Image 1 (cartoon, helix red, strand yellow):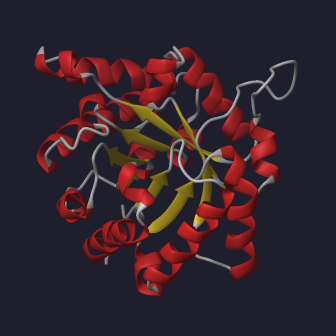
Image 2 (image 1 turned 90 degrees about the vertical axis):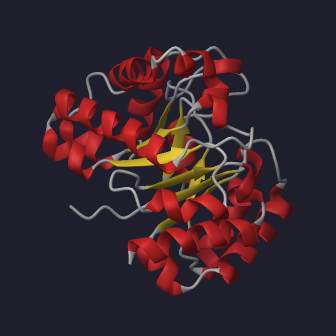
Length: 260
C-alpha cells in the first residue's frame, strides 16, 4: 500500500509569531508543487504563533499543514496555562504532537496520559502524532524493541483500527534527539518494522499497513533521503533542522524524490 510520507517540523520553543510567518513563507517559496504532491509537509509552531502561521497558510493557500506541539486531555476546565484540543481545532490545526520525549522527560508524561491526549485529538477531528522511543541506556541493554512495543501498546490502547490507521506514529530514539547522533537508516527501519508489527497485533494488519510511521532524531538533509528509501519509514519528525527553511526544504525535496 502506498503511504504518502509526512515531513513535520517541530519548532519546539523557538520563533515568535512574526518569525514563524517569515519561516513559513520562506519554506513555501523553497518548495515546488512536485515536492508537496509527493509528500505532505507540516509545521508545528509554538501556541503563540499558531494563529499567525495558520492565517498565512489559509490566506496564501500554501500546501502546508498546521500542527501543534501538545494539548491537554480534557475538553475544558480549571487547568491554568493549558490548551484543549478543541481550541486547536478552531485555529485550523490538523496535527497535534503527543507524547514527545521532552514531554515525557520534563513533564513526567506516561503512556496513559499520552493515550488520553491522543483520544482528545481524535475527538476534535485532528490527527495525533504519537511519539515513542527508547533512551540510550535502554538501547545499549538491548531493550529497544521491548520498550517501544510497550509504549505503542500503552499509547494506542483501546483505539479502533480505523482510528489507528488515520493517525501518525513517530519513532524518535531519545538518544538521537538534538545530539547530532542519528540512528542509521537500517536502525530506523528495524524498529519501525517492530512498531508496525505491534500495531498489527493490536488492531489488525490492514490498519498497520495504512498507518504512517515517521522517524525523528537529528534528521537533516544529509540523511533524509536514505531514511526515505526504507519501506516502513513514512517521513520524518524534524526538530532543529526545521528552523532553517532552506535545510527543511532540502529534507522535503530528498524525501519527495524517493516518494515519486
